[in-house]
Image (cartoon, rainbow, N blue to C red; front, top):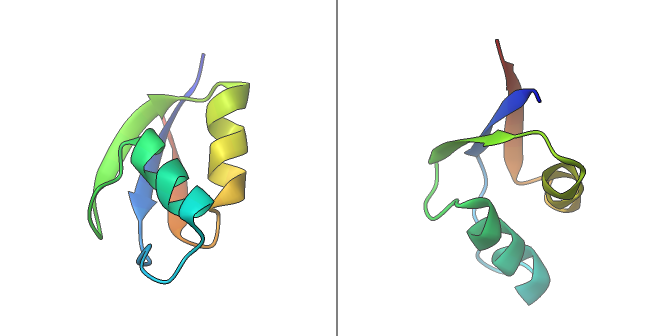
Length: 60
């Protein structure tokens, strides 16, 4: 399974509670924090929900 690198580029402040929880579930705690995760359908769905707050890169 492919891996992706997710970086938080915008703040979760003044966002819906659901989006804040999604960021936390992805493992993002602070601005410019980066996590590497497997690109499962569940993770990709969470990324889609907060795509305006994160930057996604494919890890080779």
